[in-house]
Length: 203
Image (cartoon, rainbow, N blue to C red; front, side, top):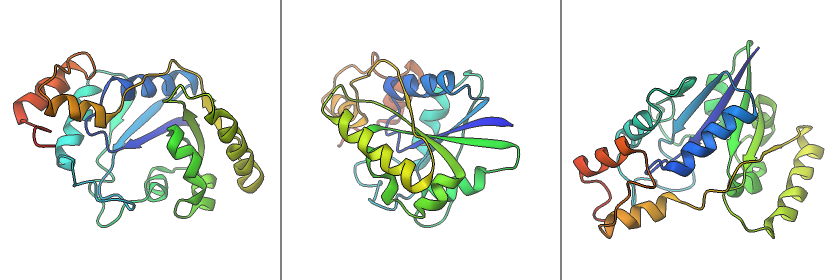
């Protein structure tokens, strides 16, 4: 049985916090394969507003994980027509010889029970989460929420313990628009790609 991770997001742009989370996910959950899945058309918001093209985001992910063993950057959601839901991606990646693990951030783990076809989503994968904030006040709320998931869906939600990286894509975009150096917050190849393409300058 292959242990397969799924890590989705806009990744606009992908940054060192994303990379650290992906590597911690692979290590702590003993993954054989990790699918990094840039979002296509999001169901909750129009990600084209304030973002670059899906193809640019896909390419940045490819550059960020180039040479990282076990990582597959997938365009499965970008190729999908219409609104794209996580459960659709899990349906496509599911196989008899795979056990799927879904990586969530703090914001996602708090609301994943309200997502489309949540019952099926929990049946298809084992959700995990990693804290991206150092706000300790959230811990109690998260514990309460995952207890609800255990009771309702019969799945334990695993916390991945890893150093907190206080960084967001919106912060990186603001740095770029302000003309600040981003070489310390994104992989070098991604920084070069953003500069060559002139991305995020008008945000």
